[in-house]
Amino acid sequence: TIDVTILPDGGVRVIDNGRGIPVGIVPSEGKPAVEVVLTVLHAGGKFGGGGYAVSGGLHGVGVSVVNALSTRVAVEVKTDGHRWTQDYKLGVPTAPLAQHEATEETGTTVTFWADGDIFETTEYSFETLSRRFQEMAF
Image (cartoon, rainbow, N blue to C red; front, top):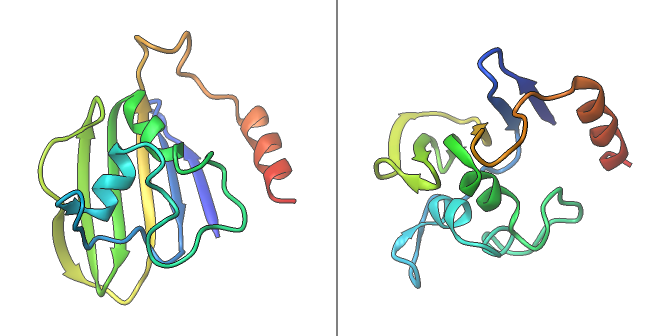
């Protein structure tokens, strides 16, 4: 299940109940996989054995591009028995990945605020997004 919410403050929150973006350290990067996915082009989809059958991104650039083009991104991952969080400002982590309470739930929540200095508008049309998501679902 994927839930998308347009927030009153102009942010967009995307929640899924999948496995959760991996949080283990990527040896070649020396960083948690979730941080690599959010900051390195073409990193998504190659962690955890296999790619995705259907993806809204293109060759792993989706969320890293969203991060680069946003004033702020907040990611929450539920995986490996815990809840993990990390915030980004202008594409850069503001602190290391933080481990929180134990949970049996899994999934990823990404909340972003598009950069108004880059985009002509940061107001979202429910109708346009709804139509696009419907197209992607089939």
